Image (cartoon, rainbow, N blue to C red; front, side, top):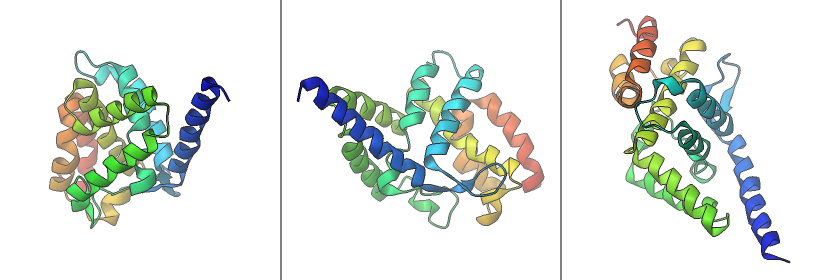
Length: 198
């Protein structure tokens, strides 16, 4: 077996593992409300969001990097699962335990790749998680706004399921969307008023 064969074997091992993301169900439903979306669908939809809403990005944001982050950002859910931000367990979202579990998952999953790609992909994932660079801030804003849009088109979705308040929507979601795409949040927030009465 050649070095090239070893590289391809590692790349396909990663790709086969990534397929498992399609089996991770999220709280958010499809727009028609027929079933929960899975995390693979969510990641694809976010990559499309980045392409379509690129004109909402701030100066210096590189949309190709944003797309790459969004395609990778939820792979850790293969091991950790989805922790819905509005669920009864929503306080676990971003907790030290979840952060540690996701870091271990990133190490395992990206570690399936050849070393150069493992390092590059892990760095992109870490950049997204840190949400400090312009690319990551915009990517994070899209990650927060997509479920809002899914709830809007499905008639309330998880807002109803989890009894979400306007204040919770603003603090858990709106602040992050507005940080990376302020005009986008103004537009979206106006459309949520019929659900929250303000």
